[in-house]
Length: 164
Image (cartoon, helix red, strand yellow):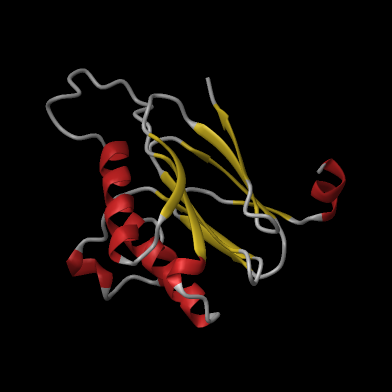
């Protein structure tokens, strides 16, 4: 694996970014309360990773946002990735989806008083993926620790390391 890793280009995603890989690559990111969603199609060996900060794009902003600005929202980023796979002729049942992040990395004095951003991000991701016809194959959601993930678009493999 190490030999192959050295041959592949690496892309690092910051919060609010997404990357769609038509060629094999390693996409990396670090998640806290943000949610990362990997999409992979074995037939075409293409993949995408979204790194969204907030659960839902406000309805009054959706039409005015650029695609780049919209990707900071979980719902927008998932629908954008779905559209990209549709354009490649991939049906939703052929896409392997994995879901990560949504941790409560900040101290919350009373967790019962109000849902955290991490929890809201997780809920939005699960709901929108279901609405869009995707099945989640694996996930690591919630908790109190951030995650470092590396997504290999050649194989669909995701390596995860908990932070802290």
